[in-house]
Image (cartoon, rainbow, N blue to C red; front, side, top):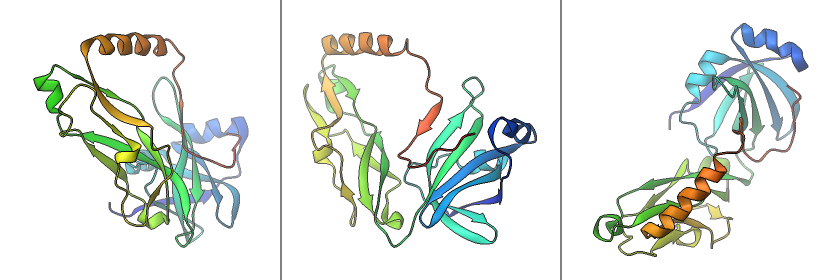
Length: 215
């Protein structure tokens, strides 16, 4: 992926007063991590929203502040529950020479023969796994190919993943990523999804984070 750079300035306005900044097209954010205390910053909302499209939890971003460049990961994004507009982002500053732990997204590809030949249903499980590596070695995503799933009951688990060189998978190896089930199981899953859908919508996209900001 092409190197992503965001220009930031220091932010002195905090708390409820940041609403004024948002109305001016600014995005409050915070940085914390490697040799940097929690630092409130300010970004351009439009530029940041466009730039971060497609960015995964394991994508390294560069934030330039006071002429100094910081390698960061996106740790939390807060959005307006109605409009989806970004309200706040937390970034973790990382060292390119120190191993870190983070989440990597899973992308499902391929068509399982069991779906066509046996009328199977593809049920998905975890959509992220935890890994450990140097920041520059982090994969942007882990691709899972389902084209080898030929029978009902066939599945792919974390233990089946092959990690890239210099990357260690930390998630439970018995966690399910995908499995082929029959129609009866599909109906049960649909009922569970309907019940889950009654819960309040989540408006904060969380990663692993160590500090809280008050905005």
